[in-house]
Length: 84
Image (cartoon, rainbow, N blue to C red; front, side, top):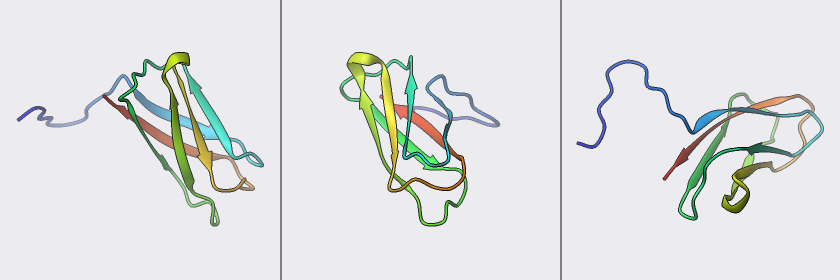
């Protein structure tokens, strides 16, 4: 077994970013990434048909961009987690 946690676990490469109303993207910077990093992202609320389309890593610049399929009319919190 690689990891077993009883209770709450904290991760250094996870967090919450807000995609502002009227926009389709949010960029998270100063995050250590490698060529094999997997960025997982999930909206934390219903957005009236908008959804997370992609989470695109940019390892050379230590950042990634979360893209929605359309610009929602409200701010949207997106939870993210990096594996590898």
